[in-house]
Amino acid sequence: MTFREATADDLAEIVRLLADDPLGATRETPGDDIPEAYFTAFAAIEKDPNNAVIVAEIDGRIAGTLQLTFIPGLTYTGGERAQIEGVRVAAEARGHGVGQAIIGWAIERARERGCRVVQLTTDRQRPDAIRFYQKMGFRPSHMGMKYPLT
Image (cartoon, rainbow, N blue to C red; front, side):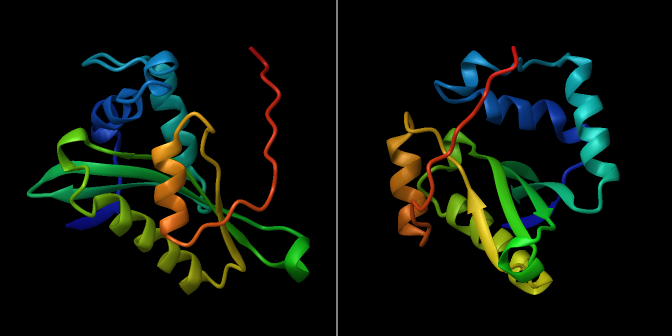
């Protein structure tokens, strides 16, 4: 398994992964001709040195993805935090250690960068994901809130 920063050529496959679960299916638009908004968002991520979309590859195929964002802050004595978002593993690769490997890779990048904490959110409707993250060492510590704008 190898890890690399995604390219715009990977977007259709990444969107397919993002849509491949009950929640993602309600908010993503996969297909060969994905909406331009994905390309616009990817271009902004690509330009930001504190942001990256990462893919895990096995035999040249994308097996998983996540977005890793480094957030400077005043808390933790001015320490930086790493935010993990959009974690998905291809259905055919689930149960083979891809999720553990890509999350572990992201944690190591955060450690190398000197981050004080790695954080992520997951929907309460994803009990399997919650168990997975807890097995990886993440602990529920805060109550997240969202304010929908659409």
